[in-house]
Structures are given as C-alpha cells and as structure tokens.
Image 1 (cartoon, helix red, strand yellow):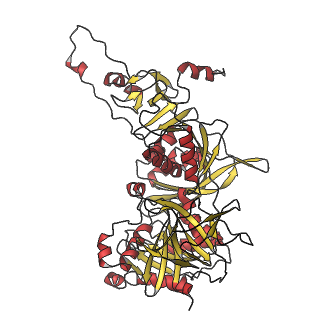
Image 2 (tube, helix red, strand yellow):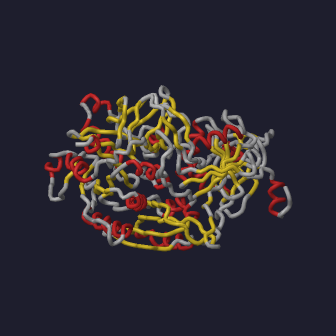
Length: 612
C-alpha cells in the first residue's frame, strides 16, 4: 500500500454559525490524549484575537488527527462570505469537503458559494446536517433543499449519491440514520463521521512525478521560526535544507532553502525531516514567498495550476490622515508606512487588491465586502496606524459597452408582521424577489437579487424596521447591468464649526436637533461630524459653546442637564454611514467622522462649482 493511501485531506466548510468550528473541536477532543483534552479550550481553532472577540472564523487554519491507522488533515475555513478567498485557496490542497448545513436554517448564501467552488475543483462532498437536536430542526426537509441546490449548481449530470451524516457538534455525536434516537445516538460518538471520511473521501492522487511541486496556500510569521508557509506537496518530496526554488506568479525562480518542516497533529506541530506527496505541512525559512507560489526543484516544463480567486466587488480609498488630530493617538501615520502595510497585507490576503493612485497619499483598496475590509482596518488600528477611509462603493466595470456592477443574493428571515415594509423597502432599492416562503411559526423567508451598493448601510435600517428580530445574510452573486444612482442618506449631519472640547451645555442645546456621536469632554475640530441631523441637510453647530456667567442667580433646574448617551461608532457603522463627501478617520483609540473639506467656506464654494 502506498504512503498516500493512509492520508485524507479535507476542508470543513459551512455558512457562518452552522457549527463548523465546534465540530472540529469535538473531532480534536476524540483524537487526542486526556492530558491534551483538558488543556483544549473551546473554539480552539479560532486562535486569532479578533476571531475570539467576534466569535467568527476569519483565517483558514490546519490541524491533523489520527483515526485508526489513517492521518486526516483538516482545514477549518471561514463561514462568512466576505472571507470567501480564504476558502478558495484551501480547496486547492484538499480532496474532499465536509459540507455542514444547519438542520433548521438549511442552505444559506455561503453554502451555495462553497458548493459551486467544489464542483469547479471536482471535490468529493460529504454532507453533514448539523444541529439535529435544535428546536425546530427539519433535517429531512433540509436534505431535500440540498438536493435541489446540487441540481441547480451541478446540472442534470450531478452525482446525488453522496453520503449524509446527521450530527450534533455541540453534543459530540454523529449518526447515519435518523431513526436512531435517545441515548443510542451517543453510543458511537463521532465514529460514523470518521468512517465516512475514510470510506468516501479519496486519498491524495499518486502522481509519482520526480519533480517537487509544493503549493503555498497561506503565509505567516512565527516569533521563533520567522517567515512560515503552509501548503501541500503536489508531487515529489521536500527535505530540510534542500536547495530549492521559489516559483512565483511572474514565472521567476528565486533560490531558497527550508530550515524546518512541521506536520500538524491536533493543535501541535510535529517536526519532521521530510514531507512527501499528499502531505499538508508548515515550512519555515522560505523568504519572499507569497500565497499561491510554488516551491520547485527546477522550472516546470508545463504551466502549474495557480490558485483561482474571484475578483473583489467593493472599493474604498485608504488615505493618509490629514485631520487636525493627526499623530496624536497613533505612531504610524506617514505615506510610506501606510503603503508598506497595505502591500504587505496583499502578500497573504489573496482576496485583497491594492492599487496606487495619482495622489501618493491615496490608495485604492479592493475587497470582498465590508467585513473583509473592516477586519483589515481593525488590525491596522491595533498596530498603531492612523488613516482615513472613504465611502465604500461597488466595483464598476464595462462589458460589451454596458456598465456592470456587482449583485448579491440576499436571504432575509422576518416575522410576518414586518414582511410588507421589508418588501417595499427592498423593491425601492432595485431588489428583485426570487423566492418567498412561510412557516407555521409566523416567519417569512425572502430571497432577493439586489445590487451590492443597496445593501451597504441597510443593515442598521433593517434592524430598526424589524425591531431587532430579523436576520439577513448575503453573498456575491454575479455582475449585472448597472441599476440606478442610489439616493443619498435621508438625514443630514451636524458638523462642528470650531476646534475645542465638547461640553454638556453645548451638547444639551443640540440634542433636540438629532443624535450625537460625541460626549462631553471629547475633543472636536472644525469639519468633524458630531451627530446625525433629524432632518435632511447638513448643519454647522458649536458643541463647544459654554454658558455665559452672570451675577444673576439661576434656578436649580437650570443646572440639571440630562444628556442622551451618544451613538457608539463601530468600524462597520462608520463605513456604512458616510457619504461621498465624507471620510471615516481611524486611530488606535478613536473612530471619528469628518467632511473631506473641513472649512465651511470651502464646502460652500464646492457646492457652487467653484475651485477650492
């Protein structure tokens, strides 16, 4: 028996919150020692600080388990559509996927995206219907929905004879038949799932090619090892200190030498001297490597298959911070530092694209969605950067003389009482209703095809319209004809007219005009947006105005000032809120909104078409 026949390389893929990371936790706990089991934390694969805070998977990560005499390499992937590029690049190094679908929600936008990619890569799919113990679970109905999705995406020749496992990742059991009930479900734990992986997911192909081909799917940095690269050996073998070449996207060969190699075992790394065909491993010492590069012995005779990533659909400008508060809270504020950081991100974040503009202080940054960009912004804030970001906009391109823009599939769940208002609102935003179903619990399920631009800024409005009870999920669908010019924000903003410190008296006199973004003792500057105007149109106000002192006595009621708490700005809220003439300013400590032109006289000149 060949070495590769005892290896299974799989990716666990699912829509967000369908139990993917929880399932991997349980798989790890069944395969490791009791000592390691006690040290294993909940959601152990979500090791990044931002992942733990937000409760989502952002980066693809590898682990490995031993079952019987097999080694199963597992890749955990993000479930949010904005991080689809993380999923795309790992599919190139696996032979099959565990497709998790919630037994209540059924297939969602990311499920569709992943399944389409699986068909493109000809991967074997093992369906896991998870959360069968959830109240309201409908596994038989969900299975029929998955069959329909297979037929829709794969056509008439698609193979529907895929294995189905029913599971509860939270409780740690898997079964093949829903007729198994009660305590009998716990008898075999997750063994039915492991057996299905061994029996159905094929081993890595045995090519027996003499030349080395190691595909790098992600890069990182280790405090002790330096630059690291994770990937799979497509053919040949790689040893420590082998003289090899880095074969990049420009078809250039650069000499390099690995100084350490590790295989994955649970959450640990096992150092090894050699990796062979089919191994997924971490290699240290490969300087200058980027995701998508190959490590080879010599220049390949035939072209190597590169990682295919869908193009970005959203664009923002990253701008050097030029506000009056520039440099007060951050250490990294220069054009050179911002440029280096953005291009460094591109080397590993394959879904991101950075383009320099005619202005050296402005960079066009393309991404897969607001969350994708907001994670980058938050990482840079924590590193000490200060910068400003423009209003997000959809990527516009021209095809056959027609103006095209990105469209998304929008899935909405609302109570029946809110259905009418949601339908009206989305129709006014050029959304096309594709499907509408109801259940016997008063819920309505809506599916729309809608321009990406329409969804930007809609989430907060949607929560208000549904009184916080509705849920919405969306994912990129396709490029289609440009729909219309979106009307600007309904409400205007309140703009500070001077530099200084906001105080209670000044804010108290303004709060009847709208909602505030600032609190007493917050520093403000001219041109900074301090609140939302309750009416259309912007107004210039003075939040620093102080009460004039006199010799006259005042009533106690005059001294009692009650202020409404300000709206707390988040990265996503700021990006959704601003208009074309505004910027969001990000520093390690603060998030501020401002006008591009800080001076009121400059803004008036621009409105009249005069040169500023």
